[in-house]
Amino acid sequence: ALDMRRLNQVIEHEPADLTITVEAGTTVKELQARLAAYGQRVALDPPWPDRATVGGTLATGIAGPARWRLGHPRDTIIGIKVVMPDGRIAKAGGKVVKNVAGYDLCKLYIGSLGTLAVIVEATFKLVPTPRSQRVVACSLPTFKQACGLAKELQWRLLPIDSLWMEWDGGPCVLVCRLAGSPGAVSRSLEELDALARQYSGAEAQPLERWPEVVSSPPVAERLVLRVSVLPSRLVACLEALTALEPELMVALPLAGVAYARWPAEASTPNILQNAFQAVATYDGILVIHQCPFKYKEGRDVFGWRPPAQPMMKEIKRRWDPKGTLSPGRFVAHL
Image: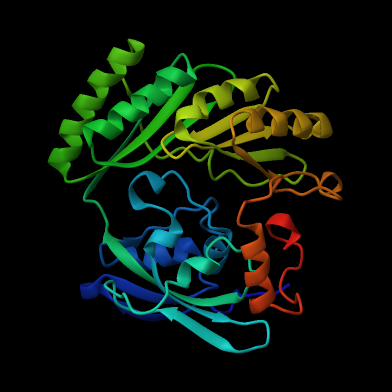
């Protein structure tokens, strides 16, 4: 394994241009703290930001609840430096936001799990830190009502920074963070409160801070599955998964992404088999996000074969002909 923690320096920061170049071993929390002094932030929102590095976040391609407004990590990166399997250093993109020269190879490395090259440096476009933020939670009886309210919020174009849905066996809880100017946030709170009463008959409840369930520390014995499905099919897919009795489900309703978690004592093989079948019914994709190692042996944790598999194999062959980097780690054992 490669330890990148000492590659933790900011190479260049241009506050006026809203860009920053940083080494891959820098944690997301450290990066955001530095930018906060300039009233700026980078659109990275991974779980465990105190542990997640910039390089790791890009390599896994993981996005959190702020995907609502800030997008995916591939949408915020404008330049990248990598080390190829043979030791050569390669660069893609640049250090300016309006960069249209050549192929956009930055996106090739995002989500590749380090199977093509080692990310050592990245350049991001930045966004201003909102002047005001408020977090509220809406309790709704069903997934359908919670997703319906989420879509309504999308249509109303409220200044929502993050949005996610939680279910632990009781009502669905839709958690929303509003961010913007104080006036816009105040007006939006009134509108959101009226919508919450319309959908559930109850007011939206203010929260002192953003809940930490999304960033709760990983436990090796737990089973966590990641589901990706068309947003229009998310409700039906979540309802099917409830039959498998997860202890918690967290979803990004407008992205069609959900995480389902079972306790350590759950019957993992049966759950995996039934979950794969349930998600396949809705043409979704299920990935084993976390589980005891013994259940990963002999199993493809991605559980699917993308139509672009031949192209992906050819890219892997060209970039890493000797299979040096993370062999078998990616989709289809690439």
